[in-house]
Picture (cartoon, rainbow, N blue to C red):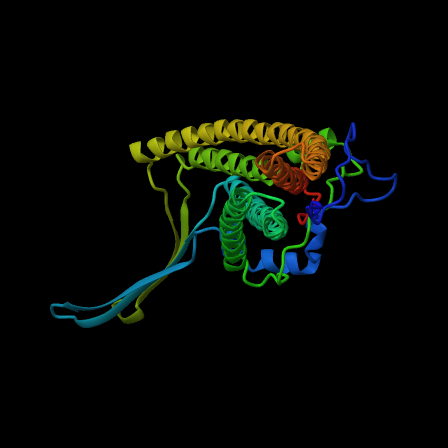
Length: 421
């Protein structure tokens, strides 16, 4: 009997190409990025609506109000007075009153330190707001690539189901023609069942990933189906250059630097507060029904004690802690930049090797199919080759997603994607 030709692998991907290095962007052109599949305006709107960003913007408004309060100072005018009715033997009753209008004044240098404290606090809040937006962008990117990765895996598994279903149909036809043993039909049916189970699992993961993305960013319009990730390409600037921009443009460092400056101003302010601010006032009085009247100036100066000294020591220690935390943040950001660079390089290399593996597996499975047609290869061996080929397609798809994920993470951290300088 004439053998029936088994269907060729028909996965919806380009033929595997073994290249020595990832494709470079042409001079003066922006390399394609999967982040560009999302509309820029829609992404900005989604980031603006993120609760963490909204909270950070509210704290900026609070810091701005705090800066105004520090600029104005806490001292206010105080009005005090009294009225008494005095009775003197053999003289009669007298109405008497006094009134004092007073206000404390900051000693020289304190007002300047208060203004600096408010300005540094506002700068720290603004940097924290930008960092909150940065973290929201990272979260969006991670969820986006989770969805595209799970969808790519599901697409491979669904194509695998189609391939095994076609194989089973062909084998059953051969069994009917007595050109194959019933065992081969059982083997093909078992392979199809395994493929269907894997496809159901991967489709479920894709649906969960999309649901998570939609829940975290409800204002972001999502397509009905995940778009296919193209081959990753290097951006116009080098990866090392973007790693340097991660540190140079870090809002985490900016916030920590502003916080350290704020604490330093507060420490100097607390040191000067050991000499308390004087209170100066104007006093008016009237006695004996106005027979005696007068006006004068009153002055009071609190005498500082141990509490003011302890407060100054505490503020100095907190300023020292803020400087240490600034050094820690610098180290963490540098570590993040180095990790982003290494991860991007490793992900690109992994994807390149997966393309080479896919090319080899496709060539192998085509040979196995040809050998099975000629009767030189058993169905079990050919099905094993099919599994390896599908595994190679899945590995390449996931490696491609991870390469995009790593590149977009470096772009976001360096403020080249979704985040301005």
